[in-house]
Image 1 (cartoon, one colour):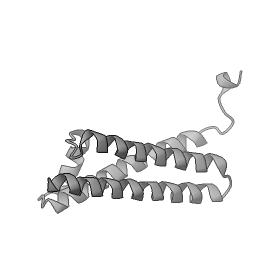
Image 2 (cartoon, one colour):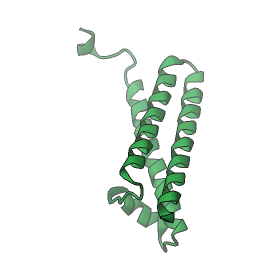
Image 3 (cartoon, one colour):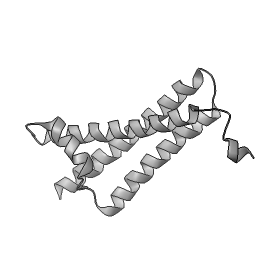
Amino acid sequence: MLLARGTGDGFGAWWWAMGAVAMYAVISYGLQYRARRRRGSLEPARDALHDLKDREDPQPPGKRVASRVIMFCGAAAAGLVAWATSGAVRPVAAAATALAAAVLWAYYDHRTQDRAARR
């Protein structure tokens, strides 16, 4: 019966899920934009937007899997923190956890991309 009616939060869970998807898109765009600027693109914003749909990953398959595991674990950790906390602490704790996970993910991608480019 509970599954048929849904949860009592209403749209709260949907807003958190949509926020996670939006954060992933913004971080992906930011990383692509930074990479395009470093390569000297004349229009890095447009090229970064184009790269989001047409990706050629500069990482080897093993490094790509590790990168995605870091990304999904960070998202799971942010979701777990949001689930475990309540009140005014929830958005602050979830945002801090998500930010830490995004920084770790970006650092790992930066380090592995530099190593692949040197080869």
